Length: 255
Image (cartoon, rainbow, N blue to C red):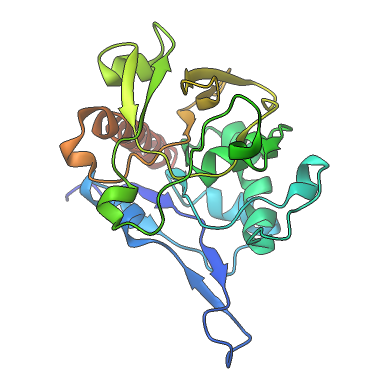
């Protein structure tokens, strides 16, 4: 019997896409699910999952991929005030604020991408810059949203990677070029998070969870984008996949 593929939970976003249907929609950008499939795993969604469902559902999966999103984490979760321009997703916030610490505590591999990194930081007690481009000394990290996707997701700046870190191993050195599609970023680092990748302006763009029993990393860039043509992105995703395979094996041995 062939081994079953590891199951990776991708928390969904929630949108009102049709003004005639106030019930809303559960959505996920295909590129995340496609990347999960291409590295040998099966993406799963739990559209109605809430914080109270986390213990039950975590026991069914082998990894958690916190995806990027146009929405921002509600600033009230780090004792700030949400901006009038913020697109918020309270259902996703409620789920991921519970999911992040639970996954880390139970040894389920976690990988946060863009908003996912920011969710990890806030869930662990950190805070965010709400408008990086207005902060003195900070770059404008936003994508040119009037350009085609290939331009928006193009490599935009270098990141400095901590020597000896997993990021440096995946990149094959202490510097790599990444894409940049975000208006917010880490301000105060969350508990047990270790900064290991930095933008030219000093912004923290890659973290690991110190003491985590399994893979627990977050990045501000988007490694899912054309990862097969980018060795750094691909090795990062492969490392997450390997951690999920190992978790799957542990689950099967426990049965």
